[in-house]
Image (cartoon, rainbow, N blue to C red):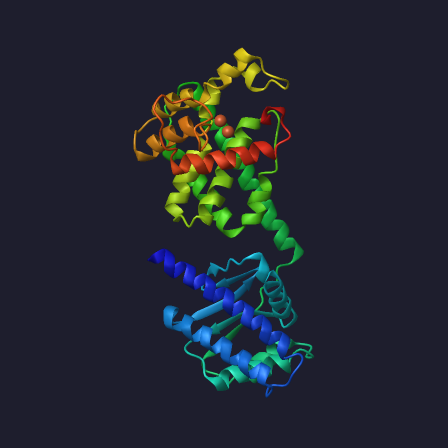
Length: 354
Ligand SMILES: [Fe+2]
Ligand SMILES: [Fe+2]
């Protein structure tokens, strides 16, 4: 049920963007009394009033390159890209950052908004010009755009990059502890993964961009963090809650933990592995279960991590490895991790991605 409401909310949000884009285009061609403008206004009123009924108050906000409706980023399909892009441009031209519908909007207020916008394009101070003309409207409130300067976006990039590298060094630390049979608890990684989840939600493109970073000597650690980030991003598309995303991220982070038992000269061998070496390499899912189950505090999450470590090379059709005598169903987390694992290997230039 909750899921259905969510889909409904997003499709209404997308519709609102599309209709607003049409209005902004139409008012630049026709005057306010034109039928096209009037029908465009009516369309917007119908959607906003439905949304107000659902949410009480509706705030449409432009943050960076994305529109948010009541703090939820509006996801849209590629066919609406032009409308989203155009509306973003119009908002920026007018220095408009947000439109809030405080209650059901009246025709008079909607017309007032439209007129204020139309007459403010030529103003030197467009945002204040619109606001001045809107003093009598009760149902609509506007907000000014937050200026993201070049420096700000550099700062965000820097923060995300730092986060990524600290995740890699955290992973190196914890995996080495496990290798030397120190008792660690999976929950130790909770805070680190939770902040990756935040970054995926807030700055998805930036953090996904980080997964392009591959380091030969540190391959396993980078790969583990990358698979964690990619799995979180996939999980988010599937509508997982934040808590489930954190669990998924932790499980994904340790999917290759069994590789810590593979001798370094095989693990880091730059050329083809011999058959015997492959046999050893193929043991890592089994060794993975053993490593995970040796951890401190056996709980649901640890068991889930053991399952994924064991199953991540099995493939959907079980044609991978290890081979099972009795067919099983590959677990959902294992499937997600398996897809992310393949993706990261394919996008890496490392020879081991064969
Ligand atoms: Fe693996
Ligand atoms: Fe892997």
